[in-house]
Image (cartoon, rainbow, N blue to C red; front, top):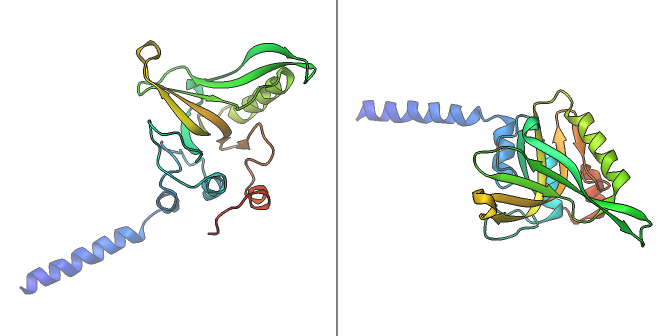
Length: 196
C-alpha cells in the first residue's frame, strides 16, 4: 500500500511538472482552440487570435457550415500563388477592376483558395502583390486568415476549400487589403471586442 501511495505521489508530481512546462504557444492554442487549423511555425501571436474574436464569436471549422469566425492556416510560401483575376471596366469606379486570388499550387490534403470579398482596382491589386512579395521574400512559411469557408468536393476530383480572405502574416509582419485588419487597437476602437 505504501509503495502504491509513493508511486501515485511521484506520478502526480511528474504530471504536474509536465503541465508547468507548457509553452506560451501551447497556452495560446488552448485559449483559442479554433483559431488555427495547421502548425503556425512561430508566426502567429496571441494578438492575431484576439483580433479574430473581435470579428466573430469563435467556433470550430466545419466543412458543412459557413462561419464568420476567421481561421488561420499556414503554408509554405512556395505552395501558394497570388494573382489578379479578371479585367473589367467599372463605370462607377471609372477604372478597370479585378479580384485578388491566393491559391495553392500543391497540397495532398486538398487545395485552399482565398478571395477578397469585393473587386479592387487593378493598380491596387498589383500594389498588394508587391507588398506580398516584400513580406514573403526569403520566408519559408506564411499564414493566411480567412472566413466563410465553402468546400467543393467535385472540382476535378480534388477537395477545394474557398475562403474570404482577411489578412496574411509572415515573420516579417502582417498585411491586409483593408485598413486596420492587423491592428488589435483598431479593432478595439471599431468593434465590440471581448475582454481578456
